[in-house]
Image (cartoon, rainbow, N blue to C red; front, side, top):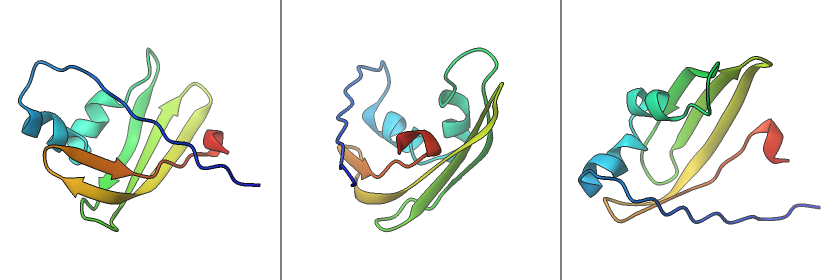
Length: 91
């Protein structure tokens, strides 16, 4: 059985909306902010920022590599970004 989950994230950031939006699509920026704590890193970050495009992020921690991937569903810069999120821990 598959369950679709929805997460709506709201965060106040002291930066221009375009800059924050673009950070979610830029592999170099993703590698800087997708860290969950000490001892974590990003081994790979690739994006194809277009509707139907895919992203791949491989995070690292003390247990090894954890892949994350998904597809961009909506891109309305800088107001709305909708994408799927998959990882071995999301099942």
